[in-house]
Length: 89
Length: 271
Image (cartoon, rainbow over all chains, first blue to last red; front, side, top):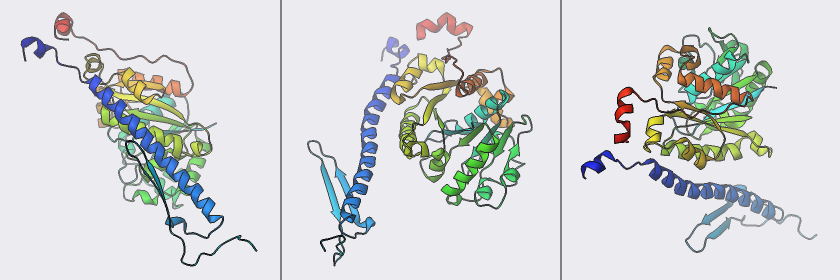
């Protein structure tokens, strides 16, 4: 560190701004996804419940984000004896 | 038509309670009838900042649960007769707040006052969610510092999705109040400046409150800064912000560094 660089401290606000921009771009997508997931979960429950009596708590929707592909995992626990509603008859 | 305003931030210690007291007082000083409501159940402080800590008898929880009437719990400010405080409970926890109870109390307050200002607790849990729930307008208090800006961004997302207005498909009015702003450090690039924060959060600017001794002095003596140092820079920023909330169009003044004689002589060399 020479005398000149002692007097010219590198401003850090620019670093703060860039770090925030990158971070928030990711976080906004992530929280947006959690709303998307909640919506998907609700609609999936509605569709299944039209035909099968299911426990709302036993429907799980999970989104795994990968670099190239993301997967949507839907896990529904059905009752042992399926009470089929509104089926033919 | 009464307006419900929430003062929120996500992060703690950025100036929500100070700003609630100052904006509430400024609106009242301009002639509106105002109630400030402390939602920080278990960690109340609005009473202390307003100088009413020894006058609390009943609180928000008592009214929510029907143990006291609203009129019994409201504390009228001794300096401004059109400013009232509804304190939070210090002994109960936030689970004592029920959504139905809060909705009823807010409804009653809207009949009595022009402005209902809800001081949100920090965080994103129940108390903070209930404080923003019925808001028409939100003031997001932010410091020019990375963790505060990040938390404000999160809160803005919640205002857009978790409030009653958002759920009805309406837009909630959001304003940024930048507090503890140090113009000198921002000018030297040591602190995020106004444009940086505005660009990142992209909500309209309500005001910039410069870092100031007057704010601490005001809380020391239990007075909103607009009453204790009405001509100071912080109070002026709050007065202007209150006028903007009331619909006046006033340009936001970005505070500039006040240079002393010595730094004016030598300032250029070290900057």
